[in-house]
Amino acid sequence: MEREEIMENKHKNILIGTLLAVVFVMAVGYAAFAQQLTINGSAEITSNWDVHMTNDGKSATPSSTMGTAPTGEVNVEEGGLTATFTANLVSPGDKVTFVVPIENTGSIDATLNDVVLTSTTPNMNIQDLVATTQDGNIKYTVTRPTASPLTANGGKDTITIVAEFVDQNNQGNLQNVSANLTVTMNYVQA
Image (tube, rainbow, N blue to C red):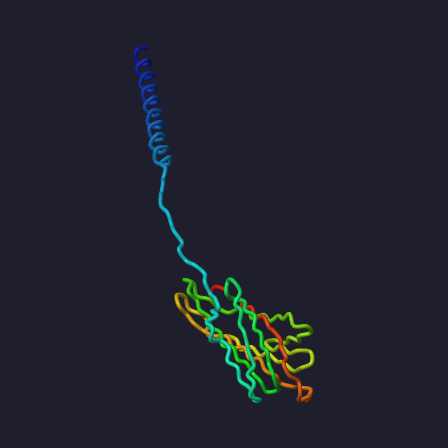
């Protein structure tokens, strides 16, 4: 019996050793997969958007064929991408040309997406970039800015608006005609 007992103890020892080896491998495996990775850091975005028209006081250039100079006024709204242009024209042939500077002082390039024309002058007919009073005597023509994209940190361009007394009805004696036009430019990130 002693031999059987020795064999039985040997089997038990092998079984216990095997179980201990399995537990050890499981413990090492768990330790390997249970590690935690922690990454700390921060990021800061410092870009800014600032595309605007400037009312430099030199934007309106009146010209007349009759001697009495017409007048023009530019009013750039807060935010800088909408401006109202008012022209007071005296005689047929009068013209006021507005050349308004546009500047990108932000840190993001900008592309002109759209130019929208509106007016508080009654019955103003607006087609694309041309606005004409109902009687046809005052005509505004808008020329889009050309820079595309308007580069960041100082990119410059201009928008040109021409108001003219065209006397399409050939009345010849019309005087002191006034109309306004509001131009809004929609820029998007390039």
